[in-house]
Image (cartoon, rainbow, N blue to C red):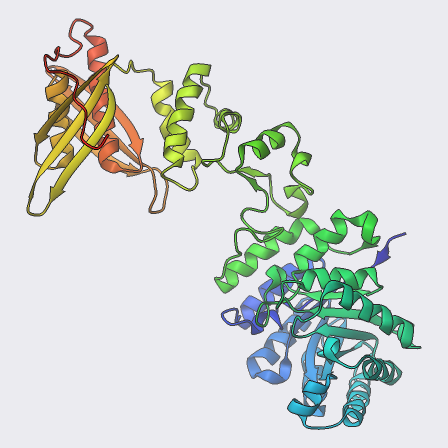
Length: 520
């Protein structure tokens, strides 16, 4: 049977101490309720002595969030412990979490005292907390950098004084997993009464090893893991609670432990924290990052389409996401594009897919990511089949507040290229006039509009036009990240539509030799 470990969430206490992550009482309560839905065992709701606002937040959460244990933090100081009890006493499961540093660097430089005095204060604080409630946690701040013999002495004394949970923090994130695991093993071996308390760990991420150190502790017998959602916290943050949850779940056979959480609430919890604080998650963040279940490389996408297990060790549904996301970008393959088009209800022939794939690749060179709206705009030209009598090969425009707008256009018709230039009221008008010269089919613009297909600076712009050729009015549209190019392509689609409808007039025959732009 898997050993049960407890999850202690400190998002609202240590997490909130991170610059920029401050929350008001209402926000803390909202977050605490979601943490309860996630199923964490203990919520450290705050540091009651630190401010009146923090006291009220802890007290409010203690009164309204009933299922988890609600803890408050207190230094090994009588006033802190009294204030902490006043804040948590209405909880269905109250806990007082008291702490004092045990490393010589803290004892000598912060407290300017002795190990003997630290031991005395530890016992006094735990006994005072025990006088208020049965559930008392003691933390030996900077435990990893403490002398092991003294640390074991303090832990034994704290348990004798009534502590039911003993927390071993790597306060400054200095530990390496093998070392931290060894420390937990030594404490379990050397402290005679250790079985009378739950052994907990609280790791910081200064070297990026908080989760790894926490998991090493689990392998060496730790029964409680402390962390925060999205890994927020002092300096580089705490151990990321969602990473720990999914690590022990995904590698259950290795760790042989279980938690009481509902993992499907992970993504929702992460996003709620981001909305409350206004600070998002880095895209490549494990479990909850935007790219955690996203695949762009063509080889990966092909494997995912055949069997998701080829590139995913957990399902997106297991953390509360509806499905994986195949990111369409320059590394994507034809297979992924075709599948996405089918999912959008766009049915194309093999030839149309090939043509759309070329346009897609061209767009990928201009955009980091191609969205569904971009695809719809791209393939619209493939679904509505228009004979490409003239094809745009080159476009160059020049305009400015004190410059006459000019445009140079090169069009290809079968194996011939034709070039012409013109001026106009603007770069688009100039380009249209140049096209008129080449095709011999002058048109008059009846309607014109530009719409952003997606958001962002690299958004695809869709140009829609209606061009009048005598008594004929031809609608057309085209898309590009360059709105002038989109406008020109849309006009050319209208020209090609008109030429296709008048097969006897497919543009005037050029007598000049093929022309090519300079710089080609």
